[in-house]
Image 1 (spheres, rainbow, N blue to C red):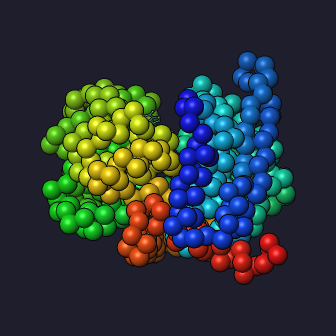
Image 2 (cartoon, helix red, strand yellow):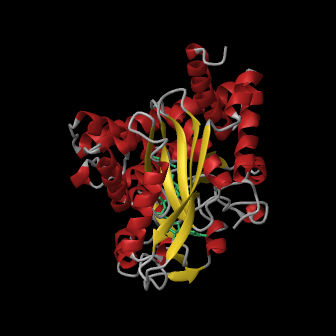
Image 3 (cartoon, rainbow, N blue to C red):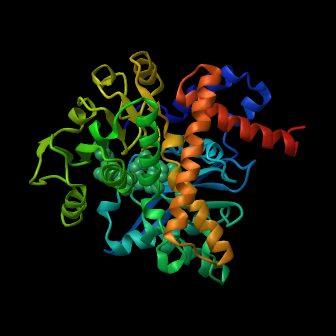
Length: 417
Ligand SMILES: NC(=O)C1=CN([C@@H]2O[C@H](COP(=O)(O)OP(=O)(O)OC[C@H]3O[C@@H](n4cnc5c(N)ncnc54)[C@H](O)[C@@H]3O)[C@@H](O)[C@H]2O)C=CC1
Ligand SMILES: O=C(O)CCC(=O)C(=O)O
């Protein structure tokens, strides 16, 4: 667990942008606080008959542009501070890609690997019932995040639907296709990372076929990003990692083969035979063109930033680079595609899923992918244009685009007279 306050770090980024864009201090003060924070302590019956009490949170940072939206994470290091930061970033994520949501996030402090499938289901259903007081298909719509998946979303949807007495598809996104999920949601965050990586390569005048890539985190985001960048952009993925360590092959990894190995090896890549093992620390400081941190926050800090050699960093994870480390990277000339732009593909397709669920009418995968690519590409270039206009960095520019949209909605609504 890190002793860095993630919410304080997020506020540092926000204040930098507020200063550059000369944001109205009253709006800045409002946006520096979450609107709602709910903490719940709830009992779960374990398989041996005992009762264990777990702690979870749901935070809604801002709802000026629409319902709160954001995932729910299961991880032992989940805290209210972390969930506040993640909800805060969701506000900017939805605004920067122009989808009509505010920001929310949730989490439960638990290691799901220590639970049986039945215990995981009971925990998921109870947590969702506990937070039902603030969620709703037009109020706050959860989705998957670290260690949650379509099955967990199906339990959430079923729990809410049982409690209200009818099926409510729009209550949660990232559901399995058979219960109102959208084609393309599972790959969506990785696909969005793939789109902005290609644009970052182009913008920096590199040849995608000559680019080498390392990816930290081989879960939903990292594995799809690696696969799609290899297959559709043509760059070489030479290293990937997960919580069990990293693997390296200078000739390029066969990502489908690594995925197949992971899926038969308790979800871990450790021991993959066609590559050399290395540590996560080594992966982060490899001599590659592109580094994609797609695991957890605070991967690049003052402890390792001097050794980072990548020319481009595309933040698949939320908050992988601390503000101090970012200043060092910017001085070195590293081009950083910030998290809430780079990983917005997931929530964008969640938006498509919510729209489909509300209408009970479902789209083809081609339509989902086309609409996603357009939103990601357009958003990338609106941030590039803002970066040039203010002569600033990509993250600050992304904040400016997003804050401007939220501030405009806030002023138009006149809710702070
Ligand atoms: N799933 C989604 O749609 C979205 C996820 N994100 C963010 O992307 C990041 C990853 O999320 P998911 O892929 O969904 O989670 P996941 O649970 O599917 O995968 C997480 C991966 O990170 C690895 N990992 C955990 N700790 C690590 C460490 N210390 N070093 C290296 N690897 C480590 C895990 O082994 C796993 O491979 C998180 O920051 C999440 O908030 C952002 C936008 C959407
Ligand atoms: O799909 C969503 O609603 C949000 C996913 C998420 O939690 C994120 O983008 O960090």
